[in-house]
Structure formats: structure tokens, C-alpha cells
Image (cartoon, rainbow, N blue to C red; front, side, top):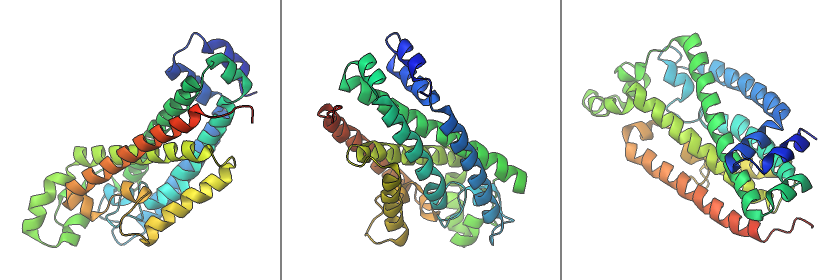
Length: 277
């Protein structure tokens, strides 16, 4: 099923990375449908952002508006693109990797677990690249590729509303730096979601329920019910991230540490997993 027989034949002479890649490609239909869905939603998010009050200001206002909600890489994207896509892909992959063919070929829980881990990393990386490529291409076609954040008349300059202060932070919004920050924050955000999916999958077998749990956590961040953001809110970018880069560094560190903790804890749980139950 889904190329599993062919995959099993190749496993013993493949590295974990190659096995993970082949495993993800064995569910290529889900990838295709998922990416088409993501493409459609990202285009809609760009069009919605274009209708905002800053529609004449620049491409980064369509990709990551300073409010943190709109844009093709901010909170709305995590809610209706990243969470559904990652949950569907990884829960299906976990189910496939725990079939008898995989178990017999990989022989140990350690190898099965790390195939899932590498697949989560690959999924996060590929989704990050896809989101950014679609965002920059679509945003550029809609409004042009000029980085108006470097201008005092741009959205950040208008919100700061202080020429001296703007000159102090303008280097923070240099194009290459903005792109790098977008890539790092989105990748770490997707990675944290992926590892949380792997963790929840040890207790919750239903993918829809896992998705509901993650959406609730995202809603807690959105509604600011806690003193600090605990989930995808740490991976969205607001004005504060550009004015105070230390905020972004703190959030990235939090996402990385949380991902490592989830990796370690889930790995320990996985070593005691009973595949016969």
C-alpha cells in the first residue's frame, strides 16, 4: 500500500535520511493535495493583506504585517495552513512507519523513532521553503518586490513615528535580514508543531483530535489568555521583533528548546512503545 512493499525492499541498504525521504514520498498523494491546499490558502492570505490599510506600502506588509495576525507567514497562516498540513502528513506517516513492514525492516524502536524525527524535520523544512517561495512570488506579483520597510514612509516608519528611532532600527529590516528571520522563525515554528504532533500521537490516535488540540493552543496565544505566548505565537513576527531583535532571539531559543524537550521526552516514551497493542 502506497509503495510500502517497494520501500521495505530498499530499507536495509538505506540510511535513516533516505528511508525518511522515501517514506514521505510513499504518501506523495497526500503531499500533492496538501501543497495545492496550502498554495490556494496562501494566495488568499496575500489577497486579504493587499486589501488592508497598508496595501500600498510593500511586499513585507503582505508577507508579515507588523500586527502579527495578517500576512502569509503570520498567525492566520499557522492556523489554516501549517497546523492542518503538518498534522495530516505526519500522522499518516507515523501510521505507515509503524506497519509491520517498517518494523521488521528497521528492527528497533530507536531506528523507527529517528525515521519519524528526520521526517518531521524534512516536512518542516520543505513547508518553510514552500511558504516563503509562494509568499515572495505572489506578493511580488501583487505589489512589487521593493522593501519599503527601509523607508520612513513605510509601515514600520509610520508606526514608530519617530525619525531618530527609525534610523536606529532601520538596519534590522534590511532585506536579507528580514528574509533570514522569516526563514528561521517559520522553520522553528513548524518544527515545534511537528515534534508536538509526534508527542501527541503517542497518546491520541485520531489526527482530527490532534489538530483540534493544536488549534486550541494557537487560540490561547491569539487571545492572550496567558502572560506569555506558549505556542505558535512565538513564531509570528510583530513590530516588537523588528524594533527589539532580542525578542526574536528569545522566541527562537524558546522554540528550539521546546522542540528538543519534545524530542527527548517522546523518544523516551517511544522506547517503551508496544507495537502489538
